[in-house]
Length: 130
Image (cartoon, rainbow, N blue to C red; front, side, top):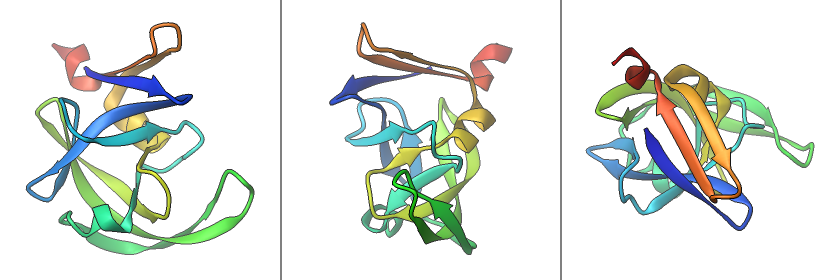
């Protein structure tokens, strides 16, 4: 399971970059906001994308929270979570790093956002099988 926090009304999970991959969990410095309104995998700013090993797969339109539409470059990249490597869609963004529902649905058995404890807990599919 991955433990995150809620700060400034935003639930986030810790992440970092190791060997060209996003690594979720641990004491990583990057904060990836859990965005249940984002239907993609991950959204990352250009300065983060440049540090990853990615395969560009095209471009897609995305509707933003304010209703505007943007065209984002779409990549396929690897995310390490609980010792497992997952391949997911990663889109370029101009904002904060995001974890979207596509990724959560692919890897998680539960996502708990507990505002009273200011805690986020993502339990992975692998843990369910154990």
